[in-house]
Length: 345
Length: 217
Image (cartoon, rainbow over the protein chains, first blue to last red):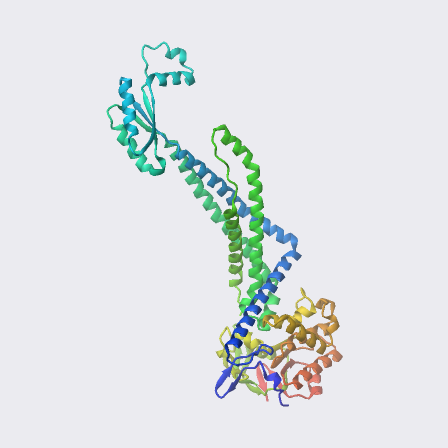
C-alpha cells in the first residue's frame, strides 16, 4: 500500500544527500526566507516557551495545593530552618549598630599629676584642645573630682576627714571619631601619655572592643548555623523532590516516550522546588516578624534602662527580599540536585 | 522504512535477547511480530523506540541511522513514533483529554491546535464523550483506546504496538486491530508484537516470527 503523502510529514528523510530533521505536523512554517517570517517564527517559539512554563507552573502549584498537609509540613520545616538564623541575624545587626554607637562615644581620660597646680593644669587642657584630632576637652579640677566622687561613692564622711585631696585633676577628651581609626585613636593616647604632667591616659574603649569581639564570635556562630540550616533546607527539598520523581517515574517514562526533552521532564520538579523554597521563606518571614514583635518590647525596655536612644530595627525590605530570594535559590538548587541524578534522556 | 542490519542485543546478565537480526519493513506496511514470551519482540520494539541500544548491528529508520542520533535529537525522533503498550501506561492523575494531549504539550502545540487534534483523535477511537473522565473510570478496552488516541494524536509515521490486545477479549482485540488497519491505510507504518497467532492469521498481514532472539525465515 502506498503511503499517504500527508503522513510522511514529520519523518526524517534523505533528499539528494541531505538529511531533514523530523518536523511534527502543524509546526511547519513556510520557508519564505523573509525577515518577517523569521520574526514570526521566533515570536511563535518564544510564546510557546512561555506558554509551556505557565502551564507547568500552574500544574505544579495545583499538585502542591491538592496535597495541603505534606506541603504545609514541608513549608514549616523549611520555615523553621530559615527563621532561626534570620532571627539571630536580625539581633546581630542590631547589636552591631548598638556597638558602633558605643564606639562613637569612647573618650580619653587624662589623669594629671596630683601635685600639679590647677592653673597650669587648666592651661595644659586648653592646649590639648588645639590638636586637630580632638573635638573637645573638659577640664575637671581635683576639687571637682573629689566632690563628684564623694557624691556617688558613699565615702563622703571618710573623704572629708582627709588632710589633703588624693584625687588628681583630669581632662575628659572627646576625639574626632569620624576622622580617626581605632589605631589612630590608640596612637593619640600614647602621645598624650608621654607628657610629663600626665600621670595616666585611658582610652575608654576596651569594653567596646570586648563587645565587638563577642559580636564577632556571635556573628561567626550565626553564619555557621545559617550555612548548616541552609544545607538542611537543601536536603529537605532535595529529598522531597527525589520522592516526587520516584512516585512519578511512570509519568517521566511516558513523557520520554512521546518525545519530551529532559528539560520538559525536569521542569515540573524545578517548579515544585521553587514553590517549596518560596513558601518556606514566606513562612520563615512570618516567624521572624512574630519573633521580632515578641522580643522588641523587652529589648526596648532594657535599652531604656541604660539611658540609650538606640531603636531596635525590624527587618526591612532588603532583608525580606534577601530571605525570599534565598528560599527560592535553595528550593531550585535542592530540586536540581534531585533531578540531575535521574536520566531523563 | 524500518531496516535492521545484523542487529544483536545482549543484556548485562549475558542474556541474548536478539541475535543477528536483519529485516526491513517498507513505509506504509503493517507487519506482525510474533513469537513466544522471551523471543525478543519487546526488545526489538525497545530498540526502535531508542529505549535500548543494540549491542551490535545498525538500525535505520526513515533513512536515519539511530546509533548516530545525538542525545538532543532523540526526543524529536520519538515524536515521529507512536508506541502502544499492553498495560496502556496512562496517567491516572489527569483526565482522558490531558492524557491524549500530552504528546502535543511536549511538542509545544498551541492550545487551539491541541484541542482540535485531541478531539479528532478521541473521536477516531469513539471516546469523545469521555474526554473529561479519569482513565480509571474506563474499562480495559476503553483505556487501551485512550492509549491509541494518545499515539495517533501526533500523527506518527511509525506505530509500534507491544501486545496491544493482551488484556482484551477477542471482540475488543479485533476492534483495536481494526483501528491499526485504519491508521495503516492513511500511510502509517505499523509494527505489532503479539503472540495471538489466530488474530495474525485473520488479519492476513506479513509476519516476522522470532524464536530465542532469532528471526525464523
